[in-house]
Image (tube, rainbow, N blue to C red; front, side, top):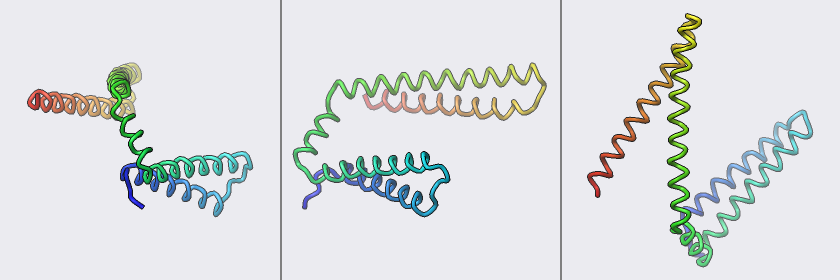
Length: 143
Protein backbone atom coordinates (compact mmCIF):
# COMPACT_ATOMS: atom_id res chain seq x y z
CA UNK A 1 0.00 0.00 0.00
CA UNK A 2 1.19 3.48 -0.80
CA UNK A 3 1.23 6.19 1.86
CA UNK A 4 -0.22 9.41 0.47
CA UNK A 5 -0.29 11.46 3.66
CA UNK A 6 2.75 10.89 5.88
CA UNK A 7 1.69 13.55 8.38
CA UNK A 8 -1.72 11.91 8.73
CA UNK A 9 -0.07 8.52 9.17
CA UNK A 10 2.16 9.81 11.98
CA UNK A 11 -0.84 11.59 13.52
CA UNK A 12 -2.83 8.36 13.44
CA UNK A 13 -0.05 6.21 14.87
CA UNK A 14 0.59 8.65 17.73
CA UNK A 15 -3.09 8.89 18.63
CA UNK A 16 -3.54 5.12 18.45
CA UNK A 17 -0.48 4.65 20.67
CA UNK A 18 -1.84 7.17 23.19
CA UNK A 19 -5.22 5.47 23.23
CA UNK A 20 -3.73 1.99 23.62
CA UNK A 21 -1.42 3.18 26.44
CA UNK A 22 -4.38 4.80 28.20
CA UNK A 23 -6.42 1.62 27.79
CA UNK A 24 -3.59 -0.56 29.11
CA UNK A 25 -3.11 1.71 32.11
CA UNK A 26 -6.86 1.55 32.82
CA UNK A 27 -6.80 -2.25 32.68
CA UNK A 28 -3.62 -2.70 34.73
CA UNK A 29 -4.51 -0.21 37.47
CA UNK A 30 -8.26 0.41 37.42
CA UNK A 31 -9.85 3.30 39.25
CA UNK A 32 -11.84 2.73 42.41
CA UNK A 33 -14.84 4.64 41.11
CA UNK A 34 -16.70 2.87 38.33
CA UNK A 35 -17.85 6.08 36.66
CA UNK A 36 -14.28 7.39 36.38
CA UNK A 37 -13.10 4.04 35.01
CA UNK A 38 -15.86 4.05 32.39
CA UNK A 39 -14.97 7.63 31.45
CA UNK A 40 -11.29 6.73 31.04
CA UNK A 41 -12.10 3.72 28.87
CA UNK A 42 -14.44 5.81 26.69
CA UNK A 43 -11.77 8.47 26.25
CA UNK A 44 -9.26 5.78 25.26
CA UNK A 45 -11.70 4.32 22.71
CA UNK A 46 -12.42 7.77 21.22
CA UNK A 47 -8.69 8.52 20.94
CA UNK A 48 -8.09 5.16 19.23
CA UNK A 49 -10.95 5.86 16.81
CA UNK A 50 -9.56 9.30 15.95
CA UNK A 51 -6.13 7.81 15.38
CA UNK A 52 -7.43 4.97 13.26
CA UNK A 53 -9.36 7.45 11.12
CA UNK A 54 -6.16 9.42 10.43
CA UNK A 55 -4.24 6.19 9.86
CA UNK A 56 -6.76 4.87 7.32
CA UNK A 57 -7.07 8.24 5.53
CA UNK A 58 -3.26 8.29 5.04
CA UNK A 59 -3.57 5.39 2.58
CA UNK A 60 -6.43 6.90 0.54
CA UNK A 61 -5.51 9.13 -2.38
CA UNK A 62 -8.93 10.81 -2.47
CA UNK A 63 -9.02 11.44 1.30
CA UNK A 64 -5.52 12.91 1.17
CA UNK A 65 -6.57 15.21 -1.66
CA UNK A 66 -9.61 16.34 0.36
CA UNK A 67 -7.44 16.98 3.42
CA UNK A 68 -4.98 19.06 1.43
CA UNK A 69 -7.76 21.06 -0.20
CA UNK A 70 -9.21 21.76 3.24
CA UNK A 71 -5.80 22.85 4.54
CA UNK A 72 -5.32 25.17 1.59
CA UNK A 73 -8.81 26.67 1.82
CA UNK A 74 -8.50 30.43 2.21
CA UNK A 75 -11.36 30.64 4.68
CA UNK A 76 -9.73 28.06 6.98
CA UNK A 77 -6.39 29.86 6.73
CA UNK A 78 -8.01 33.20 7.56
CA UNK A 79 -9.84 31.64 10.50
CA UNK A 80 -6.60 30.12 11.81
CA UNK A 81 -4.80 33.45 11.42
CA UNK A 82 -7.51 35.38 13.27
CA UNK A 83 -7.70 32.74 15.99
CA UNK A 84 -3.96 32.83 16.60
CA UNK A 85 -3.89 36.63 16.63
CA UNK A 86 -6.73 36.82 19.18
CA UNK A 87 -5.10 34.11 21.29
CA UNK A 88 -1.88 36.10 21.35
CA UNK A 89 -3.73 39.27 22.40
CA UNK A 90 -5.51 37.41 25.20
CA UNK A 91 -2.21 35.88 26.35
CA UNK A 92 -0.60 39.34 26.40
CA UNK A 93 -3.47 40.61 28.53
CA UNK A 94 -3.33 37.68 30.95
CA UNK A 95 0.43 38.03 31.42
CA UNK A 96 0.15 41.79 31.88
CA UNK A 97 -2.66 41.44 34.41
CA UNK A 98 -0.70 38.73 36.25
CA UNK A 99 2.34 40.98 36.52
CA UNK A 100 0.29 43.96 37.67
CA UNK A 101 -1.66 41.81 40.13
CA UNK A 102 1.55 40.36 41.55
CA UNK A 103 3.03 43.82 42.06
CA UNK A 104 -0.20 45.01 43.69
CA UNK A 105 -0.32 41.91 45.89
CA UNK A 106 3.27 42.47 47.00
CA UNK A 107 2.67 46.16 47.73
CA UNK A 108 -0.49 45.43 49.72
CA UNK A 109 0.78 42.48 51.75
CA UNK A 110 4.60 42.80 51.77
CA UNK A 111 4.63 39.02 51.26
CA UNK A 112 7.66 37.93 49.19
CA UNK A 113 5.64 35.03 47.71
CA UNK A 114 4.35 37.49 45.08
CA UNK A 115 7.85 38.08 43.65
CA UNK A 116 8.13 34.73 41.75
CA UNK A 117 4.69 35.25 40.26
CA UNK A 118 5.72 38.67 38.99
CA UNK A 119 9.07 37.33 37.76
CA UNK A 120 7.53 34.49 35.74
CA UNK A 121 4.86 36.75 34.22
CA UNK A 122 7.40 39.45 33.37
CA UNK A 123 9.90 36.98 31.84
CA UNK A 124 7.18 35.35 29.73
CA UNK A 125 5.89 38.75 28.63
CA UNK A 126 9.42 39.84 27.69
CA UNK A 127 10.04 36.57 25.84
CA UNK A 128 6.77 36.98 23.97
CA UNK A 129 7.69 40.51 22.93
CA UNK A 130 11.17 39.37 21.87
CA UNK A 131 9.77 36.54 19.73
CA UNK A 132 7.27 38.93 18.16
CA UNK A 133 10.09 41.36 17.34
CA UNK A 134 12.24 38.62 15.79
CA UNK A 135 9.35 37.29 13.70
CA UNK A 136 8.49 40.82 12.59
CA UNK A 137 12.07 41.43 11.46
CA UNK A 138 12.11 38.08 9.66
CA UNK A 139 8.95 38.84 7.69
CA UNK A 140 10.06 42.40 6.90
CA UNK A 141 13.27 41.10 5.34
CA UNK A 142 11.60 38.27 3.43
CA UNK A 143 9.04 40.50 1.72
